[in-house]
Length: 316
Image (cartoon, rainbow, N blue to C red):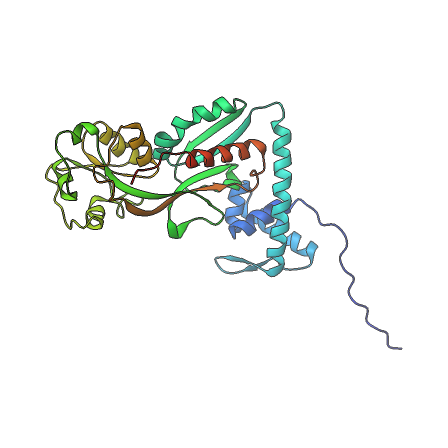
């Protein structure tokens, strides 16, 4: 006598959790090899973890191609849930580990921003929050905030390459600036007058240098091609060019937010204040979502935004 086929029973047994960390890394990096390097495992270990997890959930999580991985719909759904869960667990463990120890904010930013803008202001934060330790990584390398346990990143990026989820700190402008002692030597009536002093420039290898050099500014100012009559000094770092201008070694193109600080302090003056060129770049803040809600991280982020809001403004 024929019998009815019964539908396949749903899987109800909870999955093992051991493979979730490997799956999350592979889903985020879309590479078993990169995930293995991040977690200090072998590529075959990650592959076995993912295969075991697929058997447990009863669905493929990745489309495996020759040189790449793609998440399936099931994989993408599981990735969202796993990331949220692991972030919550990591935050809790971090808070537990932090009991009785210094609360620390880890920040990465590029060296010139650290030396010219951030470090001079940090004493104010430390006076208000003596129990919070600041760890500063002065580097502009690409940082995976989650994987490297870094709380914040301040980056200088073109408008069109603003990272997803980043918060705007300032849209940059750039303008010529020089020491007041130099300006006392001769008046500046037109852009070409600046060429009587050495023009301080950045090496073409520096990020943004080719878009923010003297040729670009003279063209913006309507002066055409201007030959430097006193020569050029070329630097590898922004803070070197700014410090050279403060010492009276020539005229620098100084950008936000350093321009505002240097003019407000009287270290530099803008001989042609109306000729401020939009830089096409901006400073942005990226926050690690895994640590964003920690009280000491929130305190530092609030302080940082307040510093930008209170920064000196350029007179028109």
